[in-house]
Image (tube, one colour):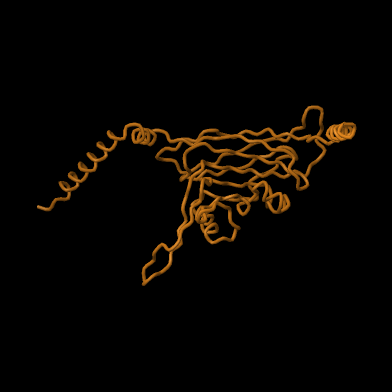
Length: 258
């Protein structure tokens, strides 16, 4: 009994003298809602933030690093591998990616590999190579190595579409404790709720983190059409079929050869 008491006292003493984090993040987006209309060509949001001390603390460090990770709604996608068979390109294999971000941006003030150790980067998913993209491999589910052909092809395609990106100069420190980050939103961005996770590092260690959110919605006529297709499917189908028949008839009249 006495031994247990001594152990408990030692643990409590260690906890009481352990240094507490002196930093906290305060962040805000320039816009928390993006409306997609027929003229939408993309947007650039700005994340502003400050590093502030906790109550009764003071900031003594000046060598901070920031990694901002923006993730869109999860979705399941499939990557296919084609081969030339008898002179024809056919799908010979495929890999399904389960509940991966439809949009993923990893933004930092310098390359992520120089901010934290490889173990820390893998644990905190810093960088595209370390971000978990779960695949269905036969009957198993796993995240493969970065140079896996299917994973590499999937990331390459998302980079080409502008839906995945990694930028090491997107975060700028205006002062040692005030920063801004440019968050690019492409024109083909999916609708839904987005999470913005901000991590603060110093000397390669995670000091604190915070998060905020934004929403991408359809607006105007596009939203009306989407709502009609979802809520009034039968009426939407009839109107669409009628419009197709009318356009076909009108085209035949206009371009009829007498």
